[in-house]
Image (cartoon, rainbow, N blue to C red):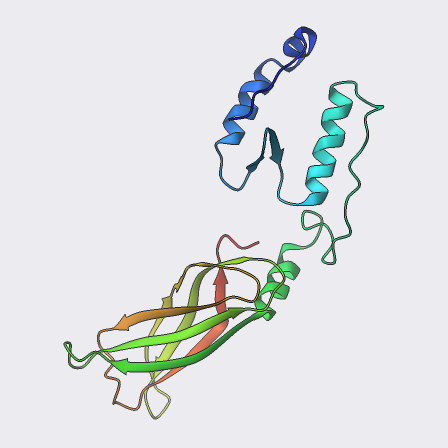
Length: 188
């Protein structure tokens, strides 16, 4: 746990803000520990902005500023979330989808496939969206399969599977990916 030592005047000025920092430290995805420093934000741009803000608050205007590294996608906080989601989705590839019979449960099958993250950052997938149609193209069933693990690192390939209890594998049924084929957890 990080130890925060404050000047008595700073303690008076910050008061309940210190309690807020402790509460933020317990929120996953919002605060990340980096040694004895608590980093708040989700991008280098946010980290730099927060450091600048704290330096102003504490009257440390002469303190060295952290230069923001170049980010090829731009600052994600300032970018359009739909554009970012579209970029991330374009880097996801799904392959090897097939229906396999479940021997111990006649008349059912298991949908399996693989998902590859071609992005330069990890993506958490909440599901692969699909529908099953018969040999004439008639709708049978739709569903979602969650990859394991759900957070897929850059260049990583994971598998997904789900049981289809009413679709026999030998019925001529086909699996078609829906639009969008992948749902990203919590959007972007």
